[in-house]
Length: 67
Image (cartoon, rainbow, N blue to C red; front, side, top):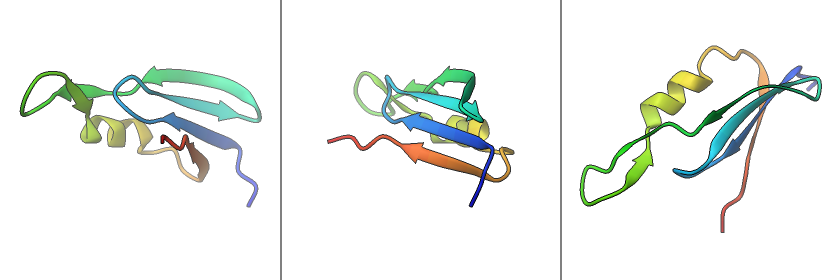
């Protein structure tokens, strides 16, 4: 499959999402977060992430493997 847009995802609350087209960076966004529902700190905002990724059409997505 030959796609023009690639989305790279660095998961986690301090991660980011990058959009590239034909090897050129279009934009980079911090991972959307919300306060944890229990305890202190942040968690990834799944709805916010979904909103960022929606409407990208046919694209390749690469997610960093976190150990």
